[in-house]
Amino acid sequence: MSASACICELMTPGGVGAVAIIQLIGDVERGLRSVGLEPLEVGAVALRDLCGVDTGLVIRWSESCAQITPHGGRATTFALMNRLADAGVEVGSAERAALRSRWPEAEDDIEAMMLDALARARSPLAIDLLLDQPRRWRAWNGAEPHPNEVRRVSSILNRLITPPTVVAVGRPNVGKSTLVNALARRSVSIVVDEPGATRDHVGVTLELDGLAVRWIDTPGIRPTPANEPEAQARESSDAIEREAAALAREVAASADLLIICVDATEGGVEPVEVGARPGQELMRIGTRADLGETPGAEIATAAATGDGLQELIGAVRERLAPAAGLGWPGPWAFDERLIASSGKATALRHDAG
Ligand SMILES: Nc1nc2c(ncn2[C@@H]2O[C@H](COP(=O)(O)OP(=O)(O)OP(=O)(O)O)[C@@H](O)[C@H]2O)c(=O)[nH]1
Ligand SMILES: [Mg+2]
Image (cartoon, rainbow, N blue to C red):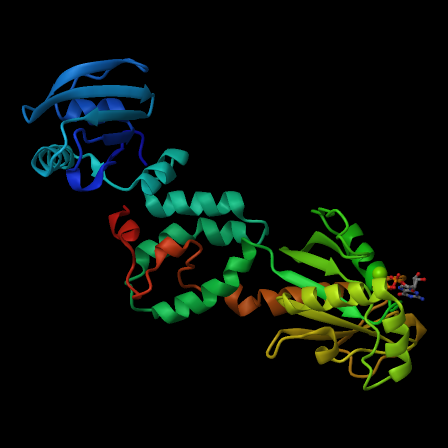
C-alpha cells in the first residue's frame, strides 16, 4: 500500500442489523477526509453527519484503523461505501486490508503477498525468485504460460517456502545417523527437534545447496519375513524395535523424497519394506562406502570421510528443486490467492497496481 492508501470494508455484510460497521484501514486520516469527515484523535469517538446520508458514530481505534457506524440497512451502507469508493478509498476484504497494513511499503497486493512469502520462506534460493515475482505477475496475461503450467511449476517452487521432507531409511547400522550428523555440521541452519515418542526418530532442518529441507533420520528397519524369516522373529521378539520400525515406515510414506541407505555389510531394503507409496520420489544411496561398494546405488557416500556428501547434497537439491524449475521465467503462484481455480487471476490480482 502506498503511504496514502486506505482500504474500506463493510464488516456487516448485507447491511442488516440496527447498526452497520464500515472499517477503514491504512491512511485513515486521508480516508475520512476524502468523504468530508474531520479525522479524530486515536481513541476518540464522535457522533458525525455521515456525508449527508446518515448520522452515526465515527471511532478512531488506532493510527491505521477507524470505523464508521451508520444505521443498518442496504441503502445507507451502500450509499456510504459508494461515497468512499468514489473518493478513492479502495474497497477490500478484511484479509486484504490486514495484508496491506502488514506491509505498508508494498506498492500493491502482489508486492504485499510477496513480502509475506519472503518472511515465511526458509530457503535462500527463494529470495531472488520472490523479489522478481511482482514484475512477472504484472507481465502475465493470464494465458501464456498456461495457468496449469504455472500451477505445476509453482507446486515445486513452493518447496522453497515450506521445506520438503527427506526421510532416510535403511537397515540398522548402515550409517543413517552418522550421515545426517555429517550433513548437519556442514549446514548453516539447523533445528534439532525433540526426540520422538519412540526411539531415534529425529528431524533437523538442513540447508542443502540453498534449499532448506526437513531431514528425518529413522530407526533401522530389518528385512521383511518373506526375505529373512529369522530376522522377522528377531523383530517380533522386540516390541520396542517393532514399534520403531513401524514409525519409520509411517514417516517414510510422508516423505517428499525417500532416501534408501544401503551399505555393503548390512545390505539394503526394498521400497515396499519401508512403506514407500507408489510413485514416491526415491533415491537409493550407498552408505559407509569406504567399507565396500553397494551395487545399484545412485551415489556412494561415506559420512566418516566426507566422500560423496557434496554429490548427495547436489542430487537432493536437484531432485526436489530442479534447476529447470528454478530457472523458469514464468510467474510463481507462491500464494494461492494469486491464481484462481478457474485459471483466471483473482480479484486480488486484478486490483493490484
Ligand atoms: N567406516 C565407516 N563407518 C561408519 C560410517 N558411517 C557410520 N559408520 C559407523 O557405523 C556404525 C553405525 O552408524 P549409525 O550412524 O549409528 O547407523 P544407523 O544406520 O543410524 O543405525 P541405526 O540407528 O541402528 O539404524 C557406527 O559405528 C558408525 O561409526 C562410514 O561412512 N564409514
Ligand atoms: Mg541411527
